[in-house]
Image 1 (cartoon, rainbow, N blue to C red):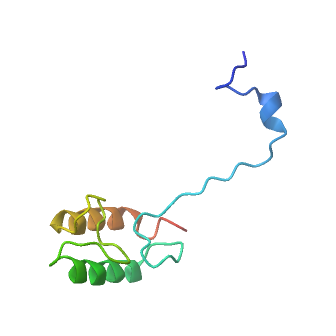
Image 2 (cartoon, rainbow, N blue to C red):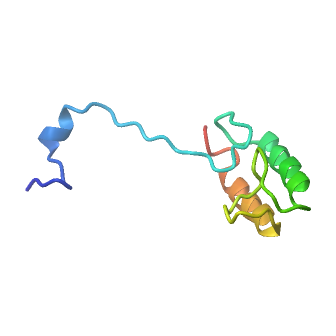
Length: 89
Protein backbone atom coordinates (compact mmCIF):
# COMPACT_ATOMS: atom_id res chain seq x y z
CA UNK A 1 0.00 0.00 0.00
CA UNK A 2 1.51 3.28 -1.09
CA UNK A 3 0.20 6.79 -0.42
CA UNK A 4 1.63 10.31 -0.05
CA UNK A 5 2.70 9.68 3.55
CA UNK A 6 4.05 6.16 3.04
CA UNK A 7 6.65 5.71 0.29
CA UNK A 8 7.17 2.16 -0.94
CA UNK A 9 10.55 0.44 -0.73
CA UNK A 10 10.84 0.62 -4.53
CA UNK A 11 10.49 4.40 -4.52
CA UNK A 12 12.85 4.84 -1.56
CA UNK A 13 15.55 2.62 -3.14
CA UNK A 14 16.50 5.24 -5.73
CA UNK A 15 16.98 8.05 -3.20
CA UNK A 16 20.39 6.98 -1.87
CA UNK A 17 21.57 7.55 1.69
CA UNK A 18 19.55 9.81 3.93
CA UNK A 19 21.54 12.19 6.12
CA UNK A 20 20.00 13.62 9.26
CA UNK A 21 21.42 16.90 10.57
CA UNK A 22 21.02 17.39 14.29
CA UNK A 23 21.27 20.88 15.68
CA UNK A 24 23.16 21.25 18.92
CA UNK A 25 21.10 23.68 20.99
CA UNK A 26 23.97 24.47 23.34
CA UNK A 27 26.67 24.96 20.67
CA UNK A 28 27.09 28.69 21.39
CA UNK A 29 30.48 29.05 19.69
CA UNK A 30 29.28 27.44 16.45
CA UNK A 31 31.99 24.76 16.40
CA UNK A 32 29.53 21.98 15.54
CA UNK A 33 30.02 20.22 18.86
CA UNK A 34 29.30 20.97 22.51
CA UNK A 35 32.08 21.50 25.02
CA UNK A 36 33.32 23.64 27.89
CA UNK A 37 33.92 26.61 25.54
CA UNK A 38 30.17 26.72 24.86
CA UNK A 39 29.39 26.80 28.57
CA UNK A 40 31.75 29.71 29.18
CA UNK A 41 30.47 31.58 26.11
CA UNK A 42 26.88 31.21 27.32
CA UNK A 43 27.80 32.26 30.87
CA UNK A 44 29.59 35.35 29.51
CA UNK A 45 26.49 36.27 27.50
CA UNK A 46 24.11 35.53 30.37
CA UNK A 47 26.02 37.63 32.92
CA UNK A 48 26.24 40.52 30.44
CA UNK A 49 22.53 40.37 29.55
CA UNK A 50 20.86 39.29 32.79
CA UNK A 51 20.83 42.60 34.66
CA UNK A 52 18.95 44.34 31.83
CA UNK A 53 16.99 41.28 30.69
CA UNK A 54 17.55 42.25 27.05
CA UNK A 55 18.97 39.57 24.74
CA UNK A 56 22.17 40.37 22.86
CA UNK A 57 24.52 38.48 20.56
CA UNK A 58 25.02 35.66 21.25
CA UNK A 59 21.66 35.60 22.94
CA UNK A 60 21.37 34.26 26.47
CA UNK A 61 17.56 34.04 26.05
CA UNK A 62 17.71 30.24 25.87
CA UNK A 63 13.97 29.68 26.29
CA UNK A 64 13.11 32.36 23.67
CA UNK A 65 10.78 34.20 26.06
CA UNK A 66 12.04 37.62 25.01
CA UNK A 67 13.86 38.30 28.28
CA UNK A 68 17.05 36.95 29.84
CA UNK A 69 16.23 35.42 33.21
CA UNK A 70 17.41 32.79 35.67
CA UNK A 71 15.24 30.23 33.84
CA UNK A 72 17.49 30.67 30.78
CA UNK A 73 20.58 29.82 32.81
CA UNK A 74 19.07 26.66 34.28
CA UNK A 75 17.52 25.63 30.96
CA UNK A 76 20.86 26.01 29.21
CA UNK A 77 22.70 24.06 31.91
CA UNK A 78 20.17 21.21 31.71
CA UNK A 79 20.56 21.00 27.93
CA UNK A 80 24.35 21.43 28.05
CA UNK A 81 24.82 18.43 30.35
CA UNK A 82 22.68 16.31 28.00
CA UNK A 83 24.56 17.39 24.86
CA UNK A 84 28.10 17.54 26.31
CA UNK A 85 30.44 15.19 24.42
CA UNK A 86 27.45 13.72 22.56
CA UNK A 87 26.18 16.40 20.22
CA UNK A 88 28.33 16.88 17.14
CA UNK A 89 30.51 13.81 17.72
